[in-house]
Structures are given as C-alpha cells and as structure tokens.
Length: 123
Image (tube, rainbow, N blue to C red):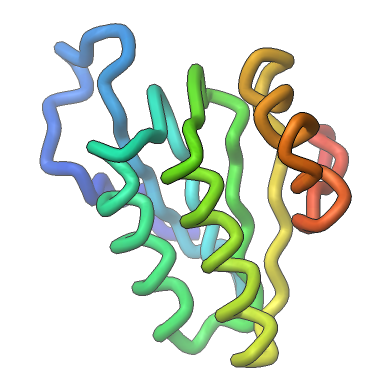
C-alpha cells in the first residue's frame, strides 16, 4: 500500500471545518479515493481531477469513501455520476462507501442511491 496522496495542496494539520480535501492511495489493484469536507461547485473540480487520474490509470477498481464528507451538492453528485459512467465505459469497477446521514440524504432525494454502486461502509 502506498501512502495517501493529497491532491488539494492544502495543509491538513490546519484544515478548517468545511475545507475540502482529497486523499488518494493505491491498495493492490484498487485506487482508493477519500473525500473530506464539502463537495460542491467550488470543490468538484478537485474531485474530478482525482477521479480522472484513477480512470486513466491501470488499476481496474476505484473505491470512493464518502464517510468524511460533510456536504454534497448537485455538482458533487454530477461528478460521482460521471465517474460511474466513465468507469463502466472503460470496464473498471467503482464502489462507493456512503457518507453520513445528511450527505446520504442528497443521494436518496435524487434517486442516485439506487443507481450508484454503494457498498456497505464496513467493507
């Protein structure tokens, strides 16, 4: 396992509540992406950058952890839909670990909880 890579350029020791960070690690044949903070119109490009890097790499699987996500808006939802669609087109597997109740509510209200590949958070 490689050490997580910060793709945001932020100083996480001094991270403020609501600040968005993306951590990426490669575990065996899986790219693990952990999103922290608020995924919205301002931060969606950072998530897209991590997703695109995972999609263009050799790993056949991408795992996205939303457990530390405090908020997601329609821009963030769109990036996760895009990831899922592009992964399918490239024969890659995507698994998404759900966020907390407030974050997950956005997926439920939009119906995306039935479309996106959510997995048990304990996995």
